[in-house]
Image 1 (cartoon, rainbow, N blue to C red):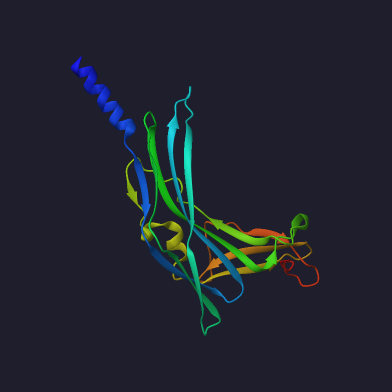
Image 2: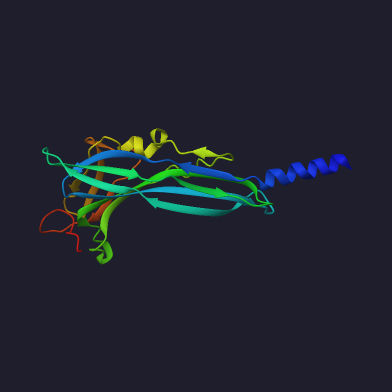
Length: 210
């Protein structure tokens, strides 16, 4: 009987234990040609637990929290703008509760890069900017408490201290412009080139309607 009670107590303790992910204040810089690009940077935090299902597939119940980083811009004499993104206050998310098996959490940075001048164009999307989204940290769930480390985040390492720009390649005899995002003049390997509608009068994408 004592063994059964001990096993039951151990089971309940595992199921009741909370798992938490925390991000402490931090900041990072990047650069871009002045008035060419806009950035949206957020801290994304997720927690989940597994719902028992028949078969091999897993099903999860999730919690999500998104926190926008504060942006500060400073124009440089080189024709670039320095963007500083800061998390001003610590942010946490946790998963608690009994009978929630496999509780785990993660934090990561999402960076959305948008053209300040040009639109996608396709299907009359002249008010929608050309954009590239970077969010590749959301699968590193941990079953224990974690503290987000900015220096380990793939997206921060990809952008921090670098000059970000778009290059436009007008396809001859076609109504398309291929857009590539660059970091310090080199293509970002994880970002696919995007095709947007070409303005035949300029050979560039259509101007963004605001």
